[in-house]
View: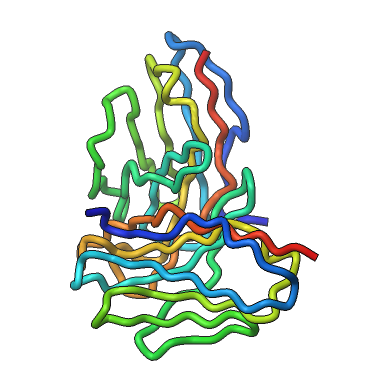
Length: 111
Length: 115
């Protein structure tokens, strides 16, 4: 079983749609969770950290479900510029901090 | 602009060459990382330096040799690479190693091609 799993997609949605991605992790002791965005041939850029209480930044909402061991990212009112690959990163070691990336979910927002 | 600077941006080298990739940050971060990323794949962790000491080596072949001369610099020395080592090499840093909610900041990478 992979430590961090994501549906690779692609998710193909119209502008204005709401879309959600999940990322599951296998180590229940994991402490750190992040969502990154990566555009084609660019470096990953931090989108948001994921806190136990959930957090929101504009159109983006991230949540953590420890019981079911997954994090989620919700994007409301999708824009064309949201088209990218969304990577989740989990501290898969549960403490000594080995950041592990999911394979990424591709999002395509079309007019 | 990224706060983590990587040079060179592109590198083409033969299998017998020796070259080095460089990474620099001036954010006072004490953890630095090297990743390898192949096309359409996620970044794969190679090395982690914590307070200038190598703390994690993810079973990387010895033809890759990391070095952390000081808290701002991270090098990756390359020797006798294979064509399958062609990839995007990403450097990242975070404020502290192992801390909760310590996101990584990435450089824009060195695109390496092995002939």
